[in-house]
Each structure stands twice: as C-alpha cells, then as structure tokens.
Image (cartoon, rainbow, N blue to C red):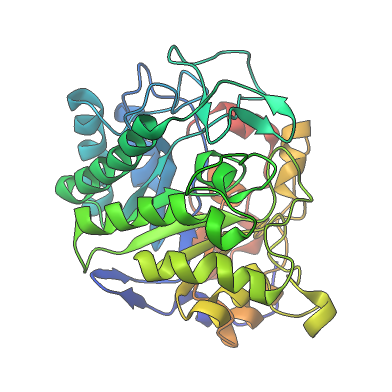
Length: 373
C-alpha cells in the first residue's frame, strides 16, 4: 500500500469550532437508501461505523433542501421536515457517541437528471436557465421568487444542521448541480444579476447562498463549499483556465463566508495548471489554498487504483499507494483529504492503514454501491 510514514495523515486539525483528530474526511457519496426522504436506523449505523473506526470528519451523502425539484432520485434524504430532521438527529448523536465529527452536505440538483433512472421530481427540475448542459433543455428556468426561496432554503438547512448538533455544514456547489450550473456559462444564459461574461459575475448566486448560510449559523460554525471544474455532463469542462480566473471565482466565495473549499478532482494527484508548475505541480486544492488563503480539502480516487468515474461503468479498484498523498500533505499543499469508495467498501480503512494492515484492506467492488454496510 505505502512505504511512506503516514503520520501527516494523523495530525489534528482545527478550524473555528471544529476540532478533528486527523486529516481524513469521509467524502459525500450518494447512497439513496432513505425511504420517503427519512434517514433511518440503517443509515445512522452506516455513519456511526465509520466514526467508530477513526474517520476524522464525516460528510454526509447529499441531503436536499426544501425545494420541490431538489432531488433526482427517490431514495435521496431530505434535510427538512420533522421526520427527516429527527432521523438526522439520530445520525449525529450516533456519530458523536463514537467520538466522531460530522456535517451534512446540503444540496439541490438543479437540472441534473439521474443517469440511473428516468424518475423525475413531482415539482419538475429547476435551474438557472432550464438547461441540463449546453443546448440541452430540462425543466424550468428559475424566476426571482424561486431564487429567493432557494437561498432561504439553503440557509434554513444550515441553521437546522447547527441546531441538531452537527459540527459543520457543506454546501454542494460541484459536479454540474444547481450552484455549478450558475457558475458554468454553458448552463447559465440568464439576463439578470446572476449571469455575466466572467466567472466572477456568475458566482454571485453561490455567494448569496454562502452569505445567507453564514448569517444563519453565525461566525464560528465552519462552512464548507464543495467545488469542481469537471461536470457529470462534461468531464473536461473547466471554469477557470488560469490562476487569475480561479482567483476571480473563489475569492468572492471565501469573502462571502466559506471557511473550507472542498476541491473535487477525478484524480487528486493531477496538477491543475501543469503548464505553470509541471506535471507534479499543485492540484486544485493546492491552488485554491494558495489563491484564497482558505483551508482546503482535496479529493479524487484516494487509496484506490482506478478513477472513481470508472465505477459507473462497472469497474472495481484495488488498494493503492498513499505515498503521493502524504508527500502533498507534508508540504501543506492542502489541509485535509477526502476518501470515498475506499471507505464505502471498508469501514475500517482508517484503522487499517494506521496499524499498517495493508493486507487487510478491501478492494472496491462496484456491487458495494448497491449495499449499505
């Protein structure tokens, strides 16, 4: 698995009111096991098991805000309504009883239908311009009332996360979902304040969401924002092609109240701007930290041999070296590392790597996506 000393992974990390025992984050992964939007005991047990096995910070699967078209699969949990919030209260209480820390990822899918099914939400899809991708129509463009209600719904979900006892909250702004559809010129054709020729102008909606969330949770509750260049609609899409344009994109979001930028790549080890600092240069999270001064989480195929996109076409992956990851942590390129499929398949992944039990690590099998264990 690794010939490198893994101590950098197990250093504590603190930001505002959040104190973590190590640098390992469980990445948000859509599971779709919530009946009628309610996270049940099986979901609480799933997260508690990772907390019991020393994951530093758990970020929940995407859980949707109170908007009619916010989800694209019937098994996605709500983060609104008494019954669903009571379920999330059981989840966080279980994680805390195991000594863990956790935040919900609050989400609105926008005009992004699931590739797994033709199910559609009763309220239909809504998005900046009624576009799922460039020139591909889906659902309705959001009017002023819908935009205002969506911003308020994000703030309400964030306030509920704090009230329920969660340790942080993450806003999903990546992967071609609602906030990302405002960022992307290919899906934002609006003629109002929330569009413009530059990424800085198209970031205004997300900045308004962040400001509302910050007001709702107060100054000391950490706010995380997940971002990506790539989209599920276009793996090669890039919002920022230079450090200057990345700064225009990210700095206003940090100024609006983001504490941690969760920077999603398909492969965390790839340089974001290799033409500037080489093939082993800073990755997305590294550049985000350098440009904004914010803390960052890196993520993308950590601990496994195969790209996570391959899982959607049935590919499995074997455990892989952590040497490159540790080297990047040692030079403080980013602050935290999120682990997805390795933790999905193996709840004991953290305790195994810490004890040097490389032979005990489980491979990722695509069948694991259909189970909650």
